[in-house]
Amino acid sequence: MEKVYVLVSNYVDVDSGDFNTEVIGVWENFNGANKELKKLMAQTREDFEDYDTEEEDYVDGDMTWSIWEEGEYSNHRCDLIIQCKEIQ
Image (cartoon, rainbow, N blue to C red):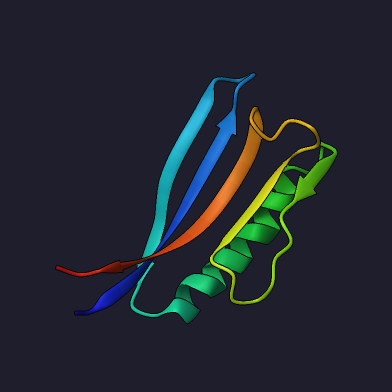
C-alpha cells in the first residue's frame, strides 16, 4: 500500500471561541511534510509572540509539536501533527 503524510494544524483559543482544525497539506514523503512543519513552527512562534509560552521539545524527525500560552494548555494552544496514512 502507498502512504501519504498529512500535516494538520489544531488551534484552540477558548477566550475568542476559535476552535480550528485544518489540513495544511498532503505529501508523498515525510521530508516534504516535515519541511512544511518546520516553517509552520516558526510562523506559529511569531503568532504567539505576545504571550508567555511553553512548547513541546522538538527533535528533528518528530511528527508532532505544540505551543501554548503558559499555564493555559487546555485554553490556548496550537498543535501541529504529521499523520502517516495509507492510501486505499
